[in-house]
Amino acid sequence: MRSVTVMVLFLLLGCAPLDRSILTRDGDEALDCVALKAEFDFAADLGENAPARRRHIRALQTEKKCVTPPKISISIGVSKSFN
Image 1 (tube, rainbow, N blue to C red):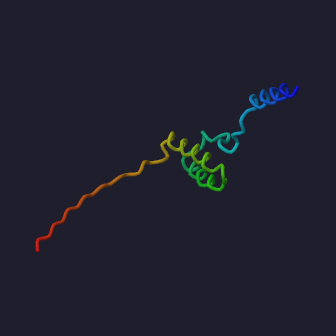
Image 2: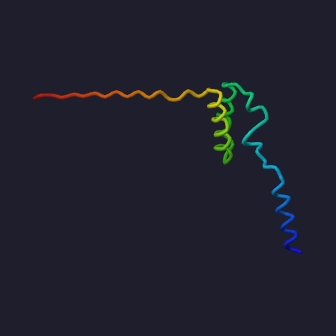
């Protein structure tokens, strides 16, 4: 009897949809760059769910080309003194 109960429990949990309400929100894909920046800043206050939400928003920003890659500048200088 116990094994049947355990099997039913696993079946019910396996069929339940995952709660992704914090990770994604309806309409995230429709946000423009300014709204995505605001969401990214807001996500910092979500506690333990912040990293997942911020990764999702960062992916949307990258997809929409809202995030400009950092520009790398390298300069090399050589000096020599003769005493």
